[in-house]
View 1 (tube, rainbow, N blue to C red):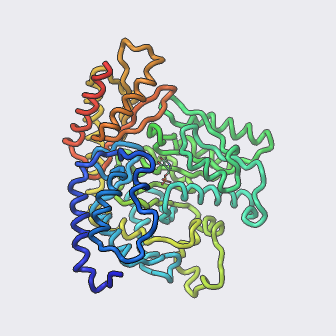
View 2: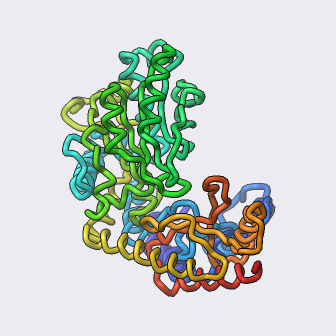
View 3: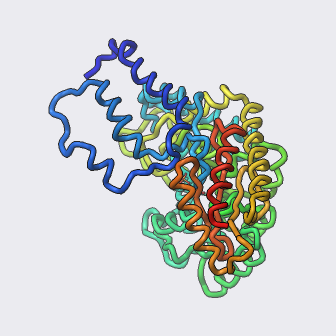
Length: 470
Ligand code: PLP
């Protein structure tokens, strides 16, 4: 065991490792190239009986672990949605780990509860969200959406489901492009996955509000009970934006809980030029976005706003003797705002990030990514045989190779092969989606320290490998 008195003397090796990683991450293959079982096979079958030197552990970190890491902080990581960190956020994480506080209630660290409250207010103001919203940090958008579904369920059943079990036929609506976390949440909440009704989308992948209204009315006519709508600002496949301004009045008129999943694209609300996305927000009951996706804050940090915190608390509150406190009711005990009891001090890294960047710094960085994406897509469009599948939006684009002489039915197989070859090259990492039956490549220009040179490096590889197919 290393005593704290040796910390300064021993930490140097770890900090050197971190410094080397941060500054050389570009040199690794972005997507891990190991085969299944390779890392496992390199880890001894039994734990060491006696202490091993830190140097040996760090050496194995390089030799065994790093080859099996997909480098999410690599600037040429353009896959999925990002999980960005920053040096500021890393510093926050160091301090969080050092404090090792478990922040379940106000009394277990008043500063954690009150900093969290302030950070939620800072973000609410900066994003121009309604003042009526109160926020809490959850581990993930999936957890926040589950919390929203559970609260909607309790509200709709007069807070009886927690006690008696869930009645059947409670219906929730989301677009056909909505994230799988909603479907998962339906199962976990006992609502039943089949009771998530997927509403058709338009050509861009956004929910069609008229179809929502018709579906709710049809369900009511069948004796079913609509309870909630989930609108998405930035779908996972193609970053489509559901028209909140048209969906909100429907949810309101029907008396349904309206939850907004803005897991990735929510960060763009820091930019006034994207304020149109939040039209209708006054009628939203809950809203989630992930600073751990596109706000330079390490995973995990998911910001969840609710209009009626009392309803959320009533859904989750449970009070064993050992958690009874004198301050109850005067302060925020965030354990009552979601599923887990124990909570990390996540507000600290947000505080480091928001103060370290400043709101303008955050805006500049978001805009830089959006500009780099415009550059990327112009270059993609100019590549022989490449076609953009939709207008670039924020820092996202999707495209495919469509050689003119190739029959349309063979294009999906070709693009699958293209994606595999690109990712095997190791210089960049892309993922795919299927858009109206077409297999397309998706790319995000989103990593915190992305520069034009990095974008050029990705483009060069795409140019080279796609040319092999022409
Ligand atoms: N919602 C959307 C639109 C997403 O794209 C994702 C993940 O990519 C999620 C929710 C789930 O996010 P989390 O991993 O924070 O649960």
